[in-house]
Image (cartoon, rainbow, N blue to C red; front, top):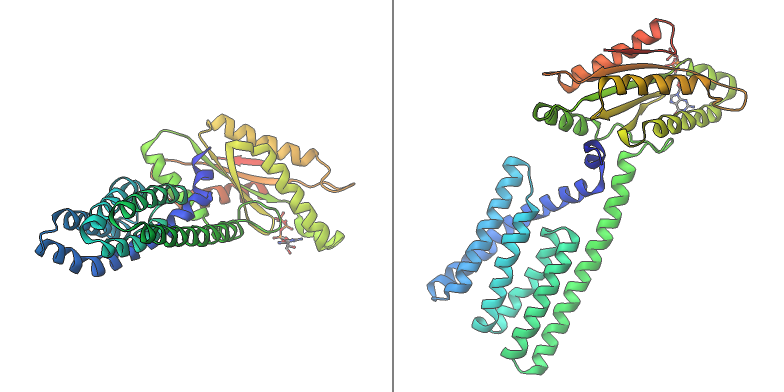
Length: 333
Ligand SMILES: Nc1nc2c(ncn2[C@@H]2O[C@H](COP(=O)(O)OP(=O)(O)OP(=O)(O)O)[C@@H](O)[C@H]2O)c(=O)[nH]1
């Protein structure tokens, strides 16, 4: 999948939620666990104290990376924080008895707010198995069964809540980035995608191109055939562009009768051929029964040291030139 499409995927927004929850959990953990870790140290409970200090250190590092570097490292939470929390449970139940069990409750819930969902399920499964074993060998079996039953319920309730939140989050994300009329991407996140592509362009030699496409004399469609017919025409144009671009790029509706295509890893020749193909296909297709229209297209290659604004401006200017030169044409630079 091309990078722009990956950037627009839901996973990114899931990570945005995780980095915020990990940051807040980090602050809370710092305040609430530190006094207990110091107490463990003073009482010579070394294993528990060291595990607690690792947990505090990773939580604090997480908060730091999110605040300063705007990056959330799920690998850090999975490979370092989760084992430290599991080890904490492993040492604290035999050493601290029921107090260790009490600490396991927030740990199980926290995994869901620190890790991508599937990893949280995995770590919760391991945690529950551990707690079950430790409770079985540490307490009388009646208590052990109650502990594991309540733990499992807490874990399941949290899993269900997080699942529902994620489903809603995904739906919201989809609505936020989709143009309701055409189903294309809207301009939300365009800035983010272009900035990342430009940033990446400095590191790689891949060719990236922007195409701005504007329907010619669209106002006359509305005026002559009504707004609903105009909407149908917009949908048809969107679908023609999307089909021709395929997996080579992503298509946005900028607003009104203007579209934008971001092409990645295409040669200049390929990009120009695609622009020409879209233009000719539109000119030759019957948009609505007995009715056709054309596109003016501005194409611009991402050049070294170009900013996002420069890139969009150049594509726009090319599109306006295409309009001035008589419409139904591609101007490329
Ligand atoms: N049906 C419909 N029309 C829209 C929508 N958004 C914008 N428009 C119309 O698009 C038309 C744009 O008109 P202009 O900006 O004058 O452009 P044009 O008629 O395409 O002329 P040129 O771009 O110069 O070729 C206006 O009539 C808007 O009302 C929409 O979502 N649906």
